Image (cartoon, rainbow, N blue to C red; front, top):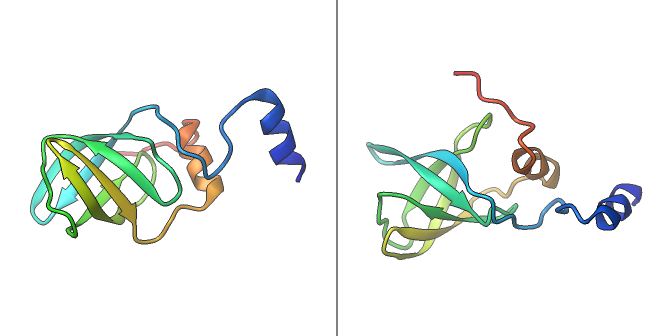
Length: 107
């Protein structure tokens, strides 16, 4: 596809690929609500860093800037870092918009 070739030539991130830039997001588990930093965001997973230490197997809700809350299952947690898999992966175009700051939050 022409889009994939042009992105490969300019060295930019490709849709569906992880990005290491931290993104501030809202986090919810039960009644606990807090803010976390999202690292290594991809269509299917993310690494979170925050004040919570959820147990593996727990469902959490992550709200990225400009998007609705998305359910994710905790795969592992070490200290205040955890790795989650989204119940429904992001479409590559949505991930691309989030990674490049093209989504806006109207609060």
